[in-house]
Structures are given as structure tokens and as C-alpha cells.
Image (cartoon, rainbow, N blue to C red; front, side):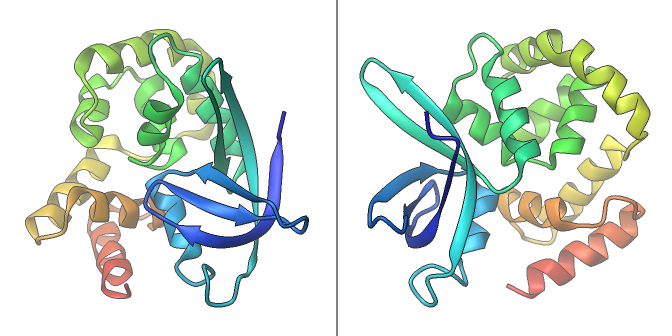
Length: 196
């Protein structure tokens, strides 16, 4: 099994990158939307070396690699695919909707409406995720305290009302300092979006 890959990104799309290792082999690595920002400056121009933690998904008819810049993302991804009915592509889509800490808090508090509203996943899928992961994440969420999920929704709605797409708003919100209040988060997100 492949656990990590280090190499240069030679091709990037919205859903995957091709990373060429020092041996000259190019691996197709599936990534979530937020990871695409990593290659805006590195793909093709400088060919900067990048490191991914890898989940190798093997079935009879496929051998897919899923890449993450952060080990916490890989661990949460593997937790999600442990939920019955959630496959790797679905888990990757869920990871792209908000920060891991926010997702964990939503699951730990049983906030199904947050999961369905922000991601577009169905109510049954959100309920299944909450039922199977709530206990695992509740203690962790209590220790960390955390951000207000309603505040995050308010920021997303404000950005969407200003004409930004749901995906643009989500990506910007993931980069915002979590400790800020709602108004400060909106201002910081606007700066991030304006700096594209």
C-alpha cells in the first residue's frame, strides 16, 4: 500500500493531480477542491516538490489514490469512509465543504441541518454520518471548545449574497481565522477572495 508520495505536480485538474516522483513515475492522486490551490503556483511553472499523505483504495476493478496535505485530513477521511454508504469520492466531497474542526463539531453536536445546508449532501446521509461518528467526535469537540456553526453559516450566506459561489465562499471560509467574530470573518474572507 502507498502511504505517501513526494514529487512534482505536472498536471492539475479540479479533482486530481498527477505527481511525478524522482523515479519518473507519475501518479494520479484524487484531491478535494481546497487542495487545488496548492498547485496554482507550483504546477508546471516551477515544478515545486509537494508531499501528500495517501489513502490507497483498492477494489477488484480499481486502484485509486487519495491525497492530503495534512495527516488530520487523511485520518478524518478514513473515519468518513468507515461510515456505511460513504465511499471515497463522497468523503472527499464532504472534506471540501468546511474545515475539519467545523465538520467534527457539526457531527459531534448532531447538527444535521448544517451538514445538509452547507454541503448539499442528503438528510439520510448526514444522519448516518452523525449516528456513526457522533460518539467518537463528541469528547474531542468538548475539549476543543470551538466555533459557532451558525456564525459559519452566516458568513457563507453573506458571501453568497455578495455574488460569490458556494464553492468560492467555502474555500475562503476554510482559510479564515476561526477565532474571529462573524463580521471579522466576512471581512477576512472578502480579502482572501479579492486576492485571487
